View 1: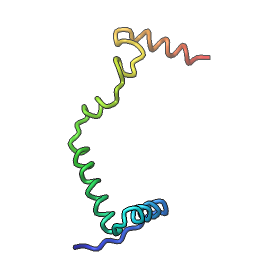
View 2: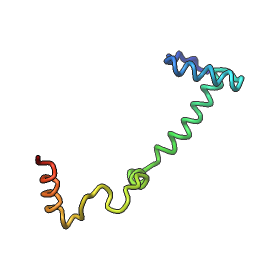
View 3: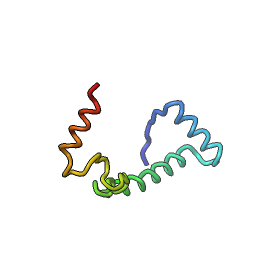
Length: 85
């Protein structure tokens, strides 16, 4: 079993104290459970592919496009005109 020294900011200290008062379990047990929960999340995230993240963005049909690709020259010209005073 290892011993670790951890520095926590005031907000984390308050959260830790609230959890300890709420649950009645030790600080060590709270930290162990937190690490275990984070491990589960990290393993899930590590196996995500870029396409999985892309699918979650929900950009809708066309994404951020302001015009179809076949009309890109016209769309660029329109965008430049809109930016000129």
